[in-house]
Image 1 (cartoon, rainbow, N blue to C red):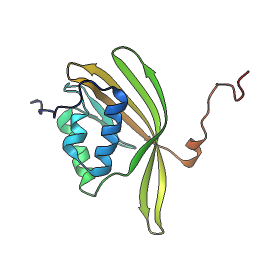
Image 2: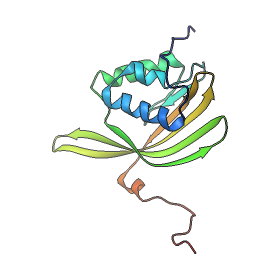
Image 3: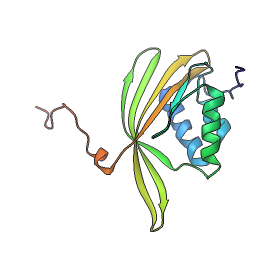
Image 4: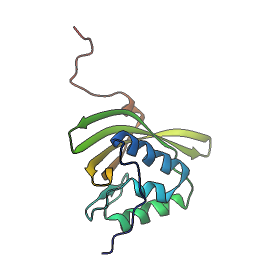
Length: 149
């Protein structure tokens, strides 16, 4: 499979900047900016809520192009939890997605995990896995103590 050329992005930045660019690209339906966030690797993977595993830049691009055909995706990351190493970073977060209903706009929730690797081109996304959530996801289940001593 032929690799698509990816637009240059910030080589000095970090995974947080790539994540911000990814969500900004969704909100503006900018497919070039969105694809520039992804690593130039054959096995990058994207799973949309309730969807199949989509592997490779061409397939991932096609899924986002299909979504952007209906307009931008008003998704905002919230409650990000990060695991960072020298060469990789994992963000687990809630996405607040604005959806239009017959009674007007409302918020929907998606639970997402974004994985980034540090590449020769800088930090890039290698996986985006999103699952449907509910308003109960706002309340987090954690083994961390509620009160610090």
